[in-house]
Image 1: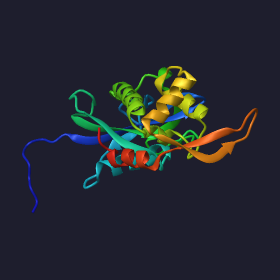
Image 2: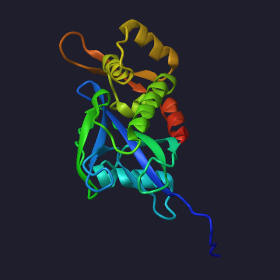
Image 3: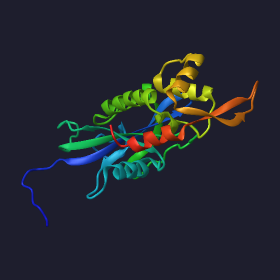
Image 4: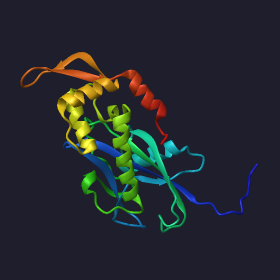
Length: 227
């Protein structure tokens, strides 16, 4: 049965703040808009949700179409619906944050709706289109909170890592230095990581390699796409 609604309905979009650690800084991948509105302005990847398309599928599709990224962790962030957020009319956006591991060297590939793409440190992003500065600020805040309260940090790390590498990642996200012994103790008490039988050789004594515990990783995965 087909229903006809007299009440006008807003359009629905998705926007994605995708993060990675690059050059020891927390970076976000942005697209430069090729079309109006805000032609030439930098923005978060995103676009309109297609009919009968699940929200997460739309977020993953838009991310791949506009940047070429197709393997990112996605988690639903918040819904933005201010009537004046889009000059084209009433447009509601469901925002996501996405994470890429630090060993991913994905540079981004501009799709048909983007003039170019680029990685920017979150502290020095250009002026963004729409309300994307607000979305990015909240996504950064949310990532920092979840890094301290869950094992979501595994999505920013390779499968195995040293405690120094993990500490540097936390410092990049949190924007603050961590005292090594205190950080090591906090990570072990939190129960997120476990040691492996592997070591990494280099200058000085070989460094023990760690990984995130499978049960901690699974807990994050089962909670994904929820704010």
